[in-house]
Length: 112
Image (cartoon, rainbow, N blue to C red):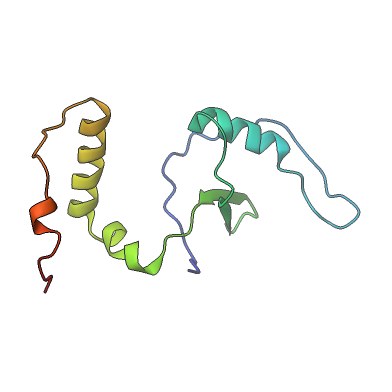
């Protein structure tokens, strides 16, 4: 999915180092990735990608992104549903679960 703009979630940027172009005009992101791992608490998902944005002053913003399968996109477009899912995951993590028993009796039901 191509984006032409992004929402800056926090404008508190911090310089973490510098780098230069290599012979193939590439920039190493090693320092950025280490900082990002610390902020996200562990290893980075191998599916991580970076949205690249540039402003009129030539400043570059890299935004870590993960692609979302099309069949899950509806959830990210529905803020209320996404909030409910996030709240449910938080409650599960906190052990706030209710055992509703087995749903085995519904296994053969037709789904419309």
